[in-house]
Image (cartoon, rainbow, N blue to C red; front, side):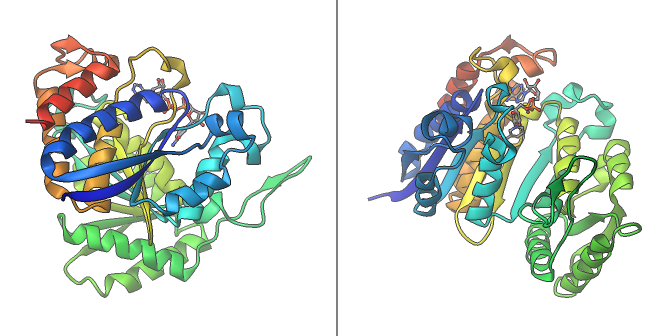
Amino acid sequence: MGRNYKIGVIKGDGIGPEIVDEAIKVLDALSANMGFNLEYTEMLMGGAAIDETGVPLPQETIQGVKSCDAVLFGAIGGPKWDNLERHLRPESGLLSLRKEMGTFANLRPAIVYDELVNASTLKPDVVRGVDIMVVRELTGGIYFGQPRELLEDRAYNTMVYTREEVVRIAKVAFEIAMKRDKRICSVDKANVLEVSQFWRETVIEVSKDYPKVELTHMYVDNAAMQLIRNPKQFDVILTGNIFGDILSDAASMLSGSIGLLPSASTGAGVGLYEPIHGSAPDIAGQGIANPLATISSASMMLRYALGEDAAADKIDKAIKKSLAKGYRTGDLGAYDAREICSCSEIGDIIANYVSK
Ligand code: NAD
């Protein structure tokens, strides 16, 4: 009997259901001949959960994810729920879910596929060969810090990091760097913020356990500039929640489309695997969304959560092959496309490649 894994599936809102369906199509085509079986349980979160239960993160979902081996997630949010109070909006469901799951490490690869060097807004010479892993702290920092308040004539948030939070995310980055080019650039704002000075000192402490990894430091404003000036200088970027949020979106554009890039949110327990983009309400329901970021996220899930590296390699190769053959969704359409495909046609092509 083959290996059996329980996968939680949160399709979400907007293009979420369309792109997750394609990832499942690919996983099913693959698992059949790779000797494992995936058992899916659908769960609600975000706008879909608000419509059905009145809250963005139902208790059932919080309990449900804990009994899974991994969770595959699409995206949440949309104008329909934008006017709700902050704690009732779809986005607060996602922030709470990450906190509940203890997924403190967000891994966001930014890879430029050779076939798409022309899709980037930067010159091909600048982006060819870019392969960066952004390791972003996900459950601390200013998005969660207390106190926070919105008052009549002022508002404030608090950026706070504890030693434990910095140590555990730094260790994740160093372990990843050991499997890559052994270079980490830790990004902070230590010239202005005490919390960043603490971050830097703590990362230096952790680095003593990893003498083979070269550690450098960069201020976040410079890092934003360097990502655009010379992105190939980076191997692993280690940073906090808000800086990582911004830098990983900037890094994503090196690859040409936000529709290409996956992410993994991992921690002590079950991990959440999701594309870096949002629910794209502007194109939802039209069948034109790019499913590759979600299919890539499924590949990360196989690799990091289930240890099915050979299956993950198959997906990664199939994505490259589809791009090399010129199959593109509309967001990449202008770049060396042989054929503009729908979301489900791309899913069919990748599923076909991985099933062989
Ligand atoms: P977005 O990422 O949804 O869209 C930005 C732009 O990129 C849009 O033009 C969209 O059409 C395009 N795009 C995104 N994904 C694409 C794909 N797979 N294929 C082709 N084009 C794609 O960001 P936004 O417009 O700022 O946010 C829309 C909603 O998503 C908001 O409600 C926001 O809060 C939410 N959001 C959710 C997540 C998440 O679920 N993790 C992340 C970011 C934003």
